[in-house]
Figure (tube, rainbow, N blue to C red):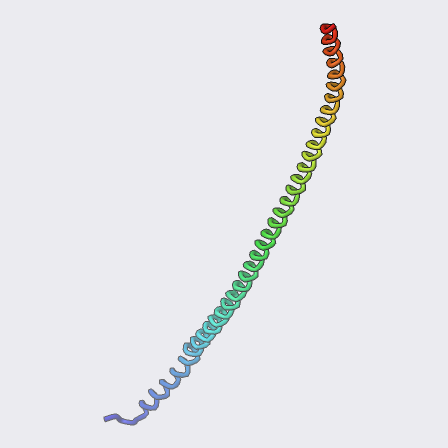
Length: 141
């Protein structure tokens, strides 16, 4: 059986003193350190989350800017293609007009040469006819 004497109360006092000292020396600093660690971890998690959100926003902005740049490049290329086609059509039209002008000029020259040749041949035909008729007449007489 347990005897309640002075040693029991001394042991109890020692235990309580040890518990208070242990609380101040070990438990409170450890709890404080764990609390700081938890606070730091939560802050880091919040910072990671905000960084992730920032990265997602920046990525979306980049993709939007890239899509806009691609669209502008496509529009620019299409405008340049249309301009080149218009220039090509203008050059073709100019070449057609020049060829038509050359063709008309050539036809006019041919027509003039034909007229000149007809007049010349007409004059020569007249003199040939006279020559032939004079020779025929000279034989006939």
